[in-house]
Length: 148
Image 1 (cartoon, rainbow, N blue to C red):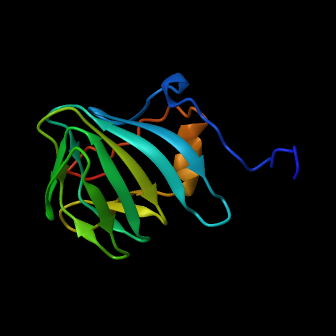
Image 2 (image 1 turned 90 degrees about the horizontal axis):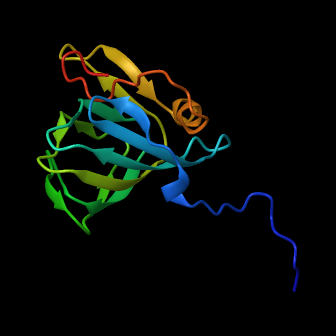
Image 3 (image 1 turned 120 degrees about the vertical axis):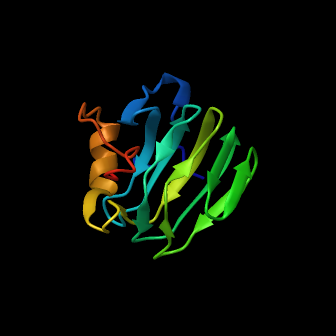
């Protein structure tokens, strides 16, 4: 038995982390970023009426609704719902009618696009790392026209 702690182990008190702005009414607390695999984990909070713009998954993603309700092409995901979004999944705008918090794992980048399909922003492990480090840039994941 060893008493040493692995330098890669993480214990975060999520209440102590600041919400970073992802877009109008959308906040994020990035919990972990793997620069080796591109995977990242976060809490995402959406205010009532907030929108997460149209996007395509260049890696699978999964998560769980911790509070509220998320509405998107698969249906309504309420508190306790588990979500899985496969590689290549395309989602139009995702909305919520009430305050919603999601625990989210991305296993690759998410590409936001406008109505013509043009890429407007890429949310990758690099972007997540910048947010985790407190970057004050306004990430525009809420804009459906044009999408971010």
